[in-house]
Image (tube, rainbow, N blue to C red; front, side):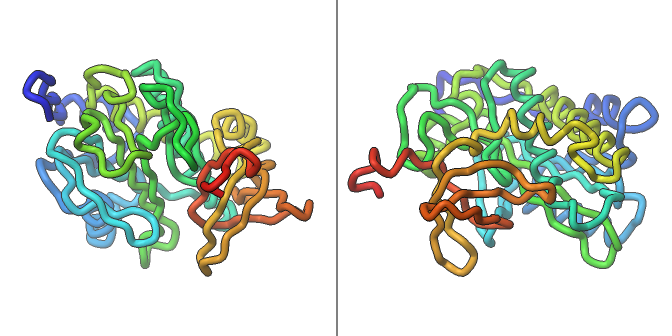
Length: 294
């Protein structure tokens, strides 16, 4: 980090607890650690050892040095530069609707980022949050947006219904701290100095509120009125996408809508609708404009 940049303020644990612990807040257990390998790994261990952590448990950390992403990817960030935390929830809805968990968590992050930074954040299906590039340039596969937040939802083994949702926000990294051109941080995107404590509280309140609304309607996002909200925030919809599927094959087409179970419906080049349950989806420009990038 450059010497003239402000060192990020540490997380204010007492303020987090006061804002989020019951009865004033939505959670039952909260801990802010100075350092941990992975907040999700730590929280999964707590859930296994004590059922009180299984619904409404939160682990946040000042520095995560062995974060886990999708497809076994690992990552780390400079101390104090990211907001990393994991939340344990019991969906309480049919398991075939759990595909909405990362999307609803993403919507909560989008709302919190917009409210606390004024950045025009949006969702990338199924589990990323993007913000506009500070320099306004396009990047193949990403357009004018860059990834600032990753989300990973994992079922806690042996709990009969607890899911741990891990969220990592690039908050204060400089461009030199970012691992790939498609990544950014809230500060690098123009948000200035981000109050990570305020952002943590805002995200958790937004996410838990959305999940309460979802549960109240049995996981039916349409009945809860959340399908339209997710669709409005989802930058993937209405774009040409290229999806690398788990078996290594590639699908290209137009992202049409999100299915009732949270899957992405894509119209392929033959006009047929394909349903994506998983896969690394990248935004691309129309094929005719890609040239050698196609």
